Image 1 (cartoon, rainbow, N blue to C red):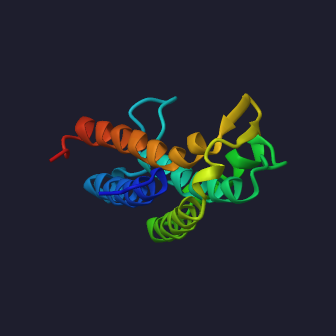
Image 2: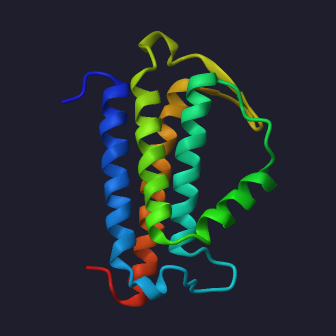
Length: 154
C-alpha cells in the first residue's frame, strides 16, 4: 500500500492510463472518431486531450509556472494529434504518462502545499499532481459511455 500521496498517484495514474486505453480499444476502429451528436466529443479527441494534458501537467509540476501558450494553441495541438492514427496518439499518451508519473514521483512531501498561480486562481501542487489521474478516469467514463451507445461495452 502506498505511503505517500505521490506513491498513490504514480500507481493510480498508470492504472488510469491502462484502463483508459482498454476503454478506447473496446470501440470499433471505424467508430473511434465518431460522435453521437454534432457537439459531442469523439473517443479519439478525448484520448488526444489526455495525451497532451499529461505532458503539460508534467511541465507544470516541474516548473510550477502556467505556460504562456493560449487555449487556441492547445485546441490546434489537440486537433492535429486527433488527426493522426491511433498508434501515434497511443505513443504520445504513453510517453506523456511516463513523464507525468516521473514528475509526480519527484515532488517532495514538503512541496505539496506550495501554491501555483493558475488562470482561474491558485492551486496547491497536491491538487495539480492529482489532475492526470482524475482527468483520465473522467475520460474513461466518457469513452465507456460512447461504447455503451455503440453497444460494445463489455
